[in-house]
Length: 292
Image 1 (spheres, rainbow, N blue to C red):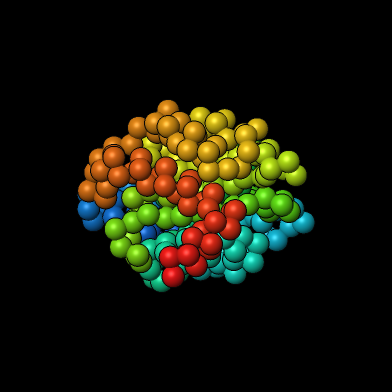
Image 2: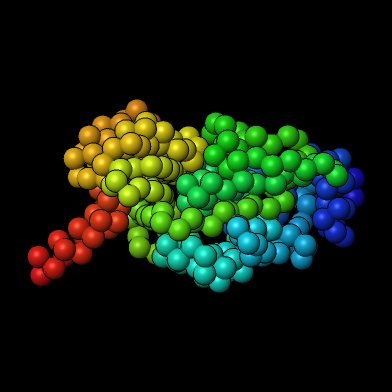
């Protein structure tokens, strides 16, 4: 069948690279947890459709010496054992990505490649310093995940280029990391906001490094650079946290939609920084015992 009304099934990843380079207007489909909705809810024309869910070479999980690399076709379920092993702080988030059926079908690579501002994996992966490998034909290039998202619906990806894998460095010893998902329902719901926090506090008690990334707060998953700058070099204390809180308004101007108001999103983000500080200093446990 000629034209756009075609289903193309590549025989290998090399075949996929050749086909997609020649058909850059095509739609790559694996689990179809997003693409299916494009068709049924928005009546989008996705032809030609290039099915990649059978390509085992895109479903590899590699636990390297310094990083975890996930092929773009790895499902959330397939990734979970290694994610929880190396990033136990992501266990709760991982189990709240959709429901079991979505996690069995949806892929990590598509969650990144689709560029949604409310995808659950980009915020923690950005905070962890992940990078992706993009491929077009036989050419490959690496892009830091924080730089991949340019604007709403626009990523640093050329026509015919696809996400082949994502590599997430392990958290260095001595650093603190957490990720929080805010949604209307506890389970099987899309994020209103998703925040990831990473900090290193040196022997003097000062913040030597801070990385904060959010989804649902801007047109793309985005670092909170102003908040980070307000923390770095300062003591990891309540006073420092409170002084940094106003910087959230510099980093994010969230919108109001069906999932949350802009005011709620901004306040929730600020409170998550407070929560992260309490949890990393042990204050949350002391407060809980005092209340009890």
